[in-house]
Figure 1: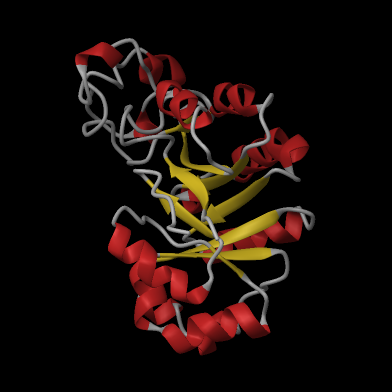
Figure 2 (figure 1 turned 120 degrees about the horizontal axis):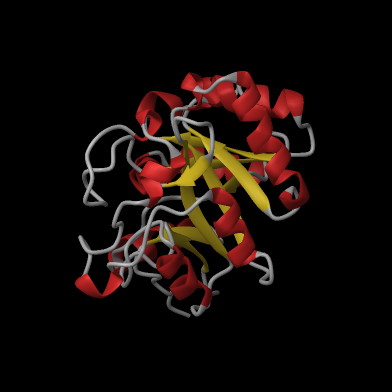
Length: 240
């Protein structure tokens, strides 16, 4: 069995994460999906970047939420990775969707700090994703927010991002609506709670999509659970 690979922030091992170059590189690989992150600019435009600030992945400084789209897209989002990517900028969400529109790639779209968004901004984003409802899972670590998304948009596939071990428990997961939902945990939680992982897969028929798997040894351990998908920077392939 071969893993179905989900590229983490694009093919971020060979191109700057969450840029159009990284997403284009991912499209040239044997993947079934791409994961990326969405923030809102000061003027309410969804942009694709991981951090709440621009320092790590651009030549700028400051918070995403304090900058307009024009200010954000004036930044160099590629030179930190390699000078050859100096023309890369922070892409808008609609630019990324356009890039993937002609492909069959499935999208895992993580919404960052959505609890700070204005309701109208969140609604605009959901409207933008309406035509993608069969090709995306909307993920958040803010489970109250993602439950609210489910309430507004019942057809939406949602993902519960989990990094806290206290949330990767049977008692906690019972509090969530797991219909048409995925669990998106750090891979260490899957490995340290094998009984729970097996129960979720066998009894609940849940999709469990662990992140971020970049070591062969970890991928091999995960294979014991017959997980079909992994999120990776390096696009590891499961041994047959």
